Image (cartoon, rainbow, N blue to C red; front, side, top):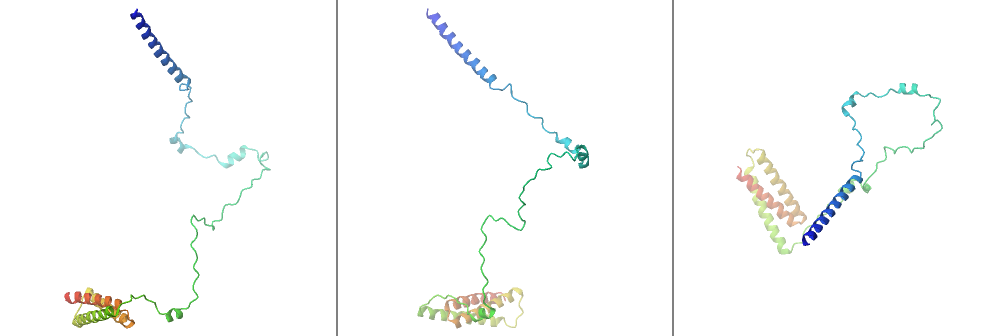
Length: 197
């Protein structure tokens, strides 16, 4: 009897499997796989070169001009935007009004420069360093006078003279920090010039 029970148990499993298989197959058939429409035939672009447009005169002769069904139809179309109007995606930059000052006003107003405040001890040290650097630069420029210089050496000599003039101008205006810096630049460049001779 156990053997018969096992047979029914296995046969009921195979019946359930068979039912599941039939159910899946019917779902596939009914879902429309077999009844799908065929895709439209693609346009053969190789024949595109052989197509010709229809002449307008041929079209006008085929239709009667007096039987126009759209004769009384009017279309309200807005005019296209003006080409002079430019659409901006960002806001326009603000306009800065031109100043009414004349060139004479610009000359009369001196340039304001911000100079660091030095203590009296720092001012004395800057004066001494400026004088020392200027004397070294003058001595080196004096050694170059009367000698033939190439283009690079002439450029160095003009830069040294420019820095010396700037240092003297800053010293006259009381800006000893700027005077010391310009004099030091003149000294370094003059030493380079003297070494290149």
